[in-house]
Length: 344
Image (cartoon, rainbow, N blue to C red; front, side, top):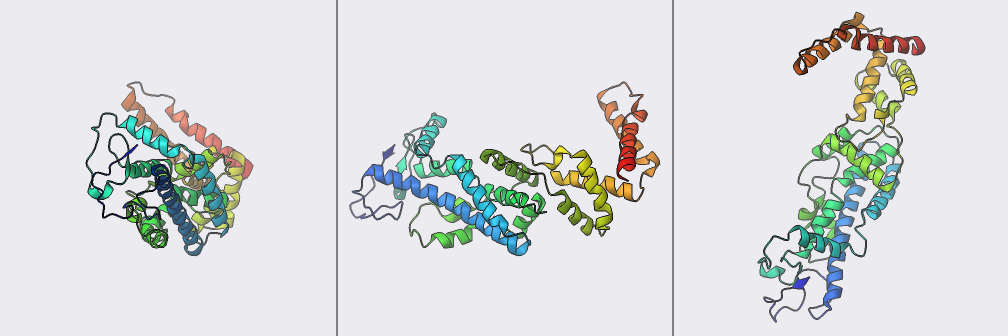
């Protein structure tokens, strides 16, 4: 680690990088520690403020129980502790990794005069940017959304990952523009800071809806949190109300189907390629609706599945499957008859 003071004139009476009370005569080691502590605390506190605003919006605009505020706080603190960003050697390790990662870069990169008092690695990269990138990798901005969704899941709310994404896009859930409020709150703590809230807390992209559920499961896995399945009853009730269908009549059968089958797909998964849990909730509802209203289609729908299977097989193999008509269709009918017999 080195400091380039070639352009630091005698007229400068205080540090250009941070609003600390110490001057240029301060010990470099102490200033180095203050620098990375300031970057780290600002980043972690900024995301925490973003999370608090999201929980407040979920309670006020989405009708979610206020219990999620305490749950989100507990999950967040455990997640930050598990991320190891507050380890004593975090800053030094980040610098060392940057030097190894960019070992082919030329040293002594030129920077504007206002950066000459900042710490840099052996290749001339600004330490403050190295630490910021390390923090953003270890605790992404989108982790605030993941923790918000996870808190709702633990609280047994019927909030879906699609609700979180829609709320962010519509501006009802603070995320894309949360940096404006964070900047106001940070203004009273330090008048001078080289990285603005706009730069630090403005997301570069929207989190894909399928990735959000996997991220929530990953956070739970990181902190060792055992999760329950999604609240099937609440989500199914919501879907039935949206479709203007009799809730109690259909939900009675749907709950019994879930109790009988206990599909593993109703638990959150870290696998982004797996179908979201809400799809399996709707699949159970479709089966229940067919049972209640005797919508079996006389095997027409099942035959369409078989025809689709035959068309798929014809693309990968020249050998037709003669058992197709008695394979998938009979299996589905046998399962459906079992459900009707035991749950009807």
